[in-house]
Length: 383
Image: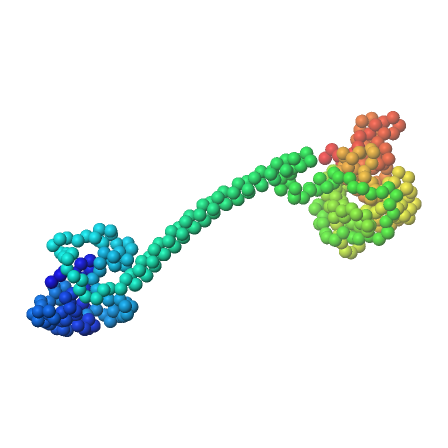
């Protein structure tokens, strides 16, 4: 009996799905595996060795093939090649003389190659798709890396350009972020002059600076309020802070705990320290018989509750002190006018080169009768 070639063993399973088995010579076998008679000789033929079980394959396996596919047909080199595109080439033509009879006529029904060719084309198409995808992915990876390098280089160039632009910015020095946003200290604010006209006349209306500054000492306590004329454009809170710091300095009238000063906002104070325009200052000083229009000075309007500080002098200072000593000049203004409120009158220095007393009219002069006095802001400067 011719041997089957190029095929896998048939795996028969229980269930009887195989039905009758037809041999390569046309002999029909029953379900029990009994051979029929050969149509040519009438002699019963032996059962092929490969059909050891009567059970057929699962029906769903048989149904998986098309109607024109014979699952029992032997595979030739051509059909094997067409149905398995990845089979080894040696499997297609490997035939031994003992197992293969080249002269034997073909038996059985020819197997259709339609399903095999479809699967071949599907496998080739799948391989082509995988290849294309691999190329696309590789291209995207390379492109992403190149774009990442380009963006990184672009960011570096932009940062370098920004630094170069900043270094070329009009030749002006740059400041760090902390220096740019750091608030000015009290001393820095008090060392700055401000624009204000010598003939300015305000509306004569005042705003009391809110808040309370407690008296720090235990001496005789004086209470005061700070008023600032509307429309001056000056820092009223800085002015109030300067009054409190100056009066309670040990070099001032609080020396050795003799006095202490407390700023209040409501209630009746002992006096009101008032920052006002030159015109308004002149009006209030005139109520006490004082003329401040000459030399544009300040005064203690003793007939009223107000100690008047001329805003022009507060903002601009005087020639006797100069712009570089504006802080000391402002301290002198406060001490001098409050000194009048406390009962002290004008005096001058007696010897050349001495410090001018705080009650000297230092806004007007430092030198008198051939004696040169040095500027001084304190009642007790040696403390």
